[in-house]
Image (cartoon, rainbow, N blue to C red):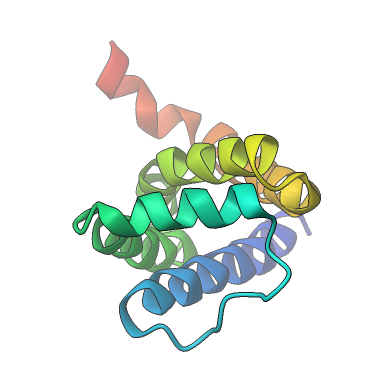
Length: 125
């Protein structure tokens, strides 16, 4: 049962990140009109750094695809983790309304990292 729940959560998590990453390249989801002014400043600053959004988008797509596959889920979780920290900090500082979903996504990511902790041991020993 635990494996099925983890697979479903990993599939949804991965698809969300693939979608978010592809949107950074193709801009098919419009920006909400009711974004706080502080969030608009943050997004404008991110857009000024021309290489940042493609880098984050590529990390989200690659990490999302790897997160879905059982064999490479541990690698996908590590690739997405820095992006997840950025999402969390952005929501804490600029847009607190998105904090609940950011925390849920962080918990899913941390659960996958915890479940795969044995795979990370060779990197730190």
